[in-house]
Image 1: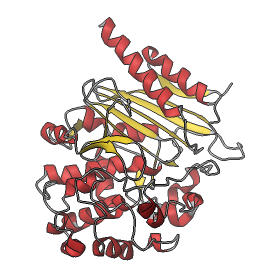
Image 2: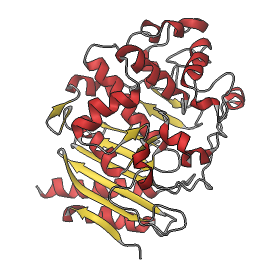
Image 3: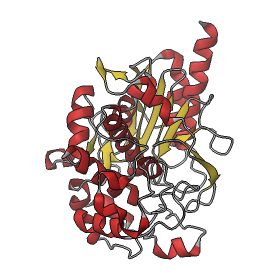
Image 4: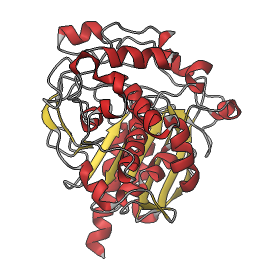
Length: 376
């Protein structure tokens, strides 16, 4: 029996049990967290941070969470919208003139946030070296045309959304996404989450087991041909990957930091006495942008602005005021705005289809919260 460490509100003991159950399904090391009404009520960790299982996962262990990073990036863009620095209903080219090439003057910021911009892949795929050349990747994306009419359904921008939104932030604010996030979100909210990791933190980063990572293969042969979905997953364990800023995919943190980062969405924009977003901007997340079969993922996906929305096909919440996103291999965070709750899960063993580890934790939290409300 794997020992579970940390703290857990007794009313949420089922979350601890769900996390323990995950070790019967292959977990190596992991953390999970729940916040309610702006406070951390579950903060648990277990297992090992290395694949040889010599070093325990500690309270401050960090791990790459892949696309769960997108939740942070979307929040940064929404903050800039909230401040009037950009308008999510305006064309991307308003802030990035070169982006108008390829007849993309009709691509709006919200199209990029909702994966409906028609740029799910590079026309000329980048290799494992070029992926670290920010300017070159942005140049390529700015120069190519959309593969479908912007706004006409989604096609998951798994990697490309990071350069698109990261460059947007840089053009508008002058700072990279990682630096904007650090100064405007991580430091005010006391978060141990990093997009662009300093070397001083490397010793506490968990190794990621990538052997069971299953790449996304688009059912559209033309998109599949251009997607570099066979990107070497093992890049995740390299120094270059950890140091670089990949706003779509290389955030390093743990469940506690992810859950705390999403408190503003669940708490009228406020966390740690800081007003990061207005309630009206949070409402915009729930404006449905698409609800159809995603051209890349091949399954029906309901998307709002910057986040996935609760649906029959992705039933991750108990009400329509729920948003979420997940990372390649298993990390996930769900925000129940109606009930002021966030739930997150982060781990270091990547799994593929039918992975229920995060789902177990999330629905244990949903059930515990429902019982608590019923008893109140």
